[in-house]
Length: 154
Image 1 (cartoon, rainbow, N blue to C red):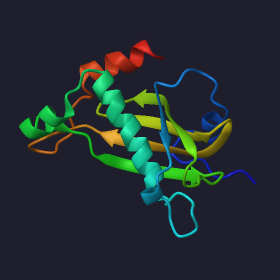
Image 2: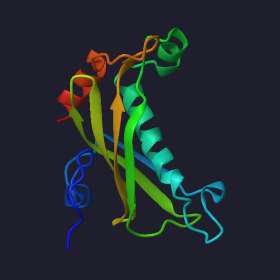
Image 3: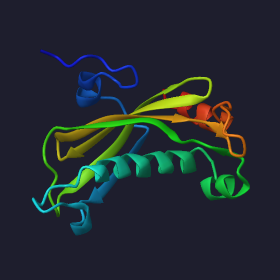
């Protein structure tokens, strides 16, 4: 029986079989400090991989995150994060982390992520970032630079 659809997630099959060009793709080793006693990746590290790809996306879109945070111009806290682990990643493996798709709302963006080891999909997931005013934490529009960058890649 297939899992129930989740409102903040992309369909599993869509992320597993995605064949388009990812918005961001990073290759990285699975480091010793990222694994648990079983020698497999410690589960929250996959969310860190997603976050690193997201940060690269912001940089590519021309968003200076350190300046934005210092000036408290806006913030983009997570409202939702999830990951499904499909095959193990071990210390020394090479992982390809992909930010695949994005759906832009008025004040939030939903991202679909995938981590691969070779051709095998090791993990998939989704995150939702809500953009808020850095001082009041009230919702604010998604930055125009990010929207334009994503639209150019869809």
